[in-house]
Amino acid sequence: MPRRVYERSLLLSMVCLVVALSLASAGSGRAMERTAVGGTPFETIGFAWMRAQVGSEFYYTVFNDPRVLPLTAEYPPLSLPEGAAFYQAGEFLDGSSYMIDVLSNLHEVEAASGQVVSIVAATPPPTGETYTGMAIDPTTGVMYACSSNFSGSSTLMTIDVATGDAKVLGTVTNAPALQAIAIDGEGSLWGFGSTNDSLLSINKRDATAVTVGELGYDVHEFGGAGMAWDPIHDVLWAVAFRLDLLRSDLLAVDRESGSTDQSGELGVDFPGGRNLLGWLGLATPEYFDIFADGFESGDTTAWSNTVP
Image (tube, rainbow, N blue to C red; front, side, top):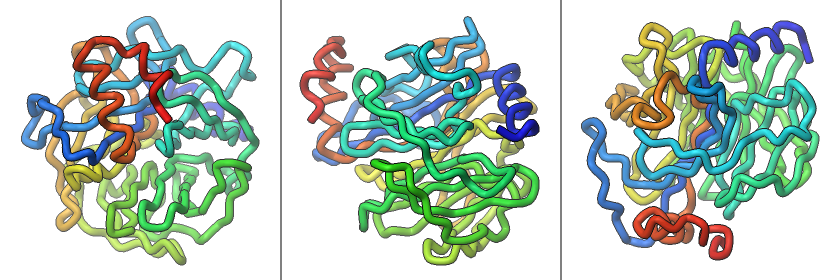
């Protein structure tokens, strides 16, 4: 691993939490009764990997309230090689959470339990870059990924989650530090990062990007960001670490203007402290009721037996 990439990862460790967080949403037509944290209510299920400042914990979490990020499973397992402890790219797909560490290993874990299913070597991104985002296209089933060196270059790829094979589509224009991507129900690809702190509309064929507008949020330059689309409520969500306030926030993103509704601080009630989120993703409709039932009944142990 390049030295500056390793140093950047160490910095993330010292500052806060890299959280793997995949929002899972369902379209069963059933609405979760949640209180709005900010102007836009969070009415879905989240899946995440994170490092909490409190106890310096690295863990995978499943949550339905952005203020509470429970420890579902410690991650990574101690059996993994040193240096593979940061996951800045991830996505939920078909009952699994997929995430890529800074050594370009692609991990598949059970979404319900956070237990390892498989680990394969992903195609390394261009020299000097690390994976920073993943997004499933709900219109085609194609998984996209992005990478960046955080100082001038970002790349868009497609990736096979079964094999880790990635194909470069192009250098993302107007994105010197692309940190997250998401694809909505119309197949439109969105992204954002530090440096310009703006929402980007990205062409999936050649990676050309157009700036939609400023987020109105100061994104931390070394990562801790994610983005996902909620298919039930048609909301584009983002998570980002704000360096001036030393906290991670949940943001609802306006796709027409790029502006954001800051809907609350992530993990403020649990685990507390400063929490850095690594990625964000949303589940498909068929998984919503399963996870929502567990939260409502207080019995989340049944998830592993009922998730398809």
